Length: 431
Image (cartoon, rainbow, N blue to C red; front, side, top):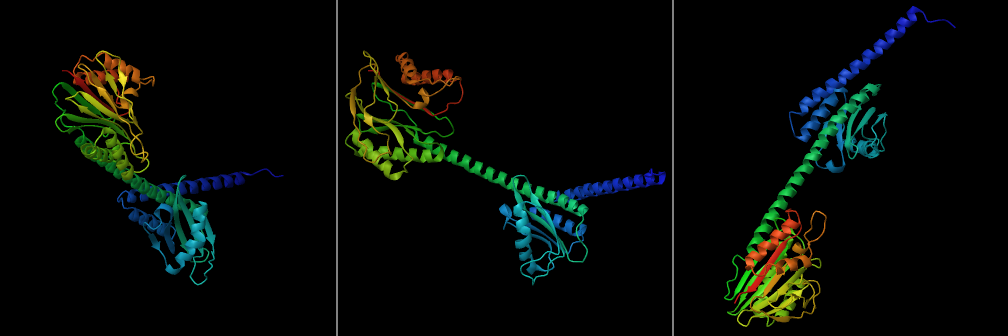
């Protein structure tokens, strides 16, 4: 066994140096390619133009006879980018039999003397397919072909193709993200516009003025949890001696809830004027809502008619939180006589009840946004606390009672935004 000579060592050193030099030149060429193309890509935001720049650069770098970008998935049919196609009739065959399978396998590939089932179209002698992909998506492939003999792709060229493919992938990914962002912004704009319209509808449906009736102090207020709520209340004059009062909670939020609320108001107003009794008004309103809404749309509703000359209140509760009747000389009583929620069952049966309103009595109507308000420990305020709270402030005016209730619920929930709509009506007989 002979020992290495100085000349052998020098030769090995020379070869290592030559290899390092070639590697450095390859790295420099890659960096220069990235810089040059990136700079050109920054001159336009047109995705077609960006891909044309990349295809044109590939054609020059590889001295290619064939060059095109094959796209599928989200970009299939959106736009078509080609560089140089000497035999257009051959493109469909190559895409179908070579490129598409490689793209679906997510594997870049080269072929020497590729064949095609249809032998009539001319085929390139060497074909490179650089798949354009991210970890989540596959966009297509950068395709390069050479028709001259002995012009196959080297490992260095496949690395350059990988660089070009990365730039093309980034361009496509940015375009995709931009399109998604634009759609999200358009959807957000439509949602905001819907909420604005719904808010206008709801504002127009709520009473603009409180009823003024001799011997009674009446107030009502609704505070939506968001821009648009699902609560609704109304006062409907019925002749000289009667006032219809309603408080409902429609399912859902946004524009659909506001439209259902408008439907409810129109239905109740028309039926209040034409139905002979409270229970008939509820029954007719239920049938109309059932016929005009889908099965997932319904309303909880408390409806009553106050005869302020005879001081009688006839009511029907359609699945709503039972209002409280505070007597001047007796314990409070819940008003729970009635029937099912409206719009759920077409032939629902409703019953009514009549209560006498004495001097000093208070009728307190509310929605579940008050009793279900939670403190930081996720504990609900609850109906018991609400009944006791109102009971301590019966001497105040109707408007002040409402203020005190909202203040107490706000304090309990930590002054945060309510999780659900909160609506109150107070009817107090003062004479």
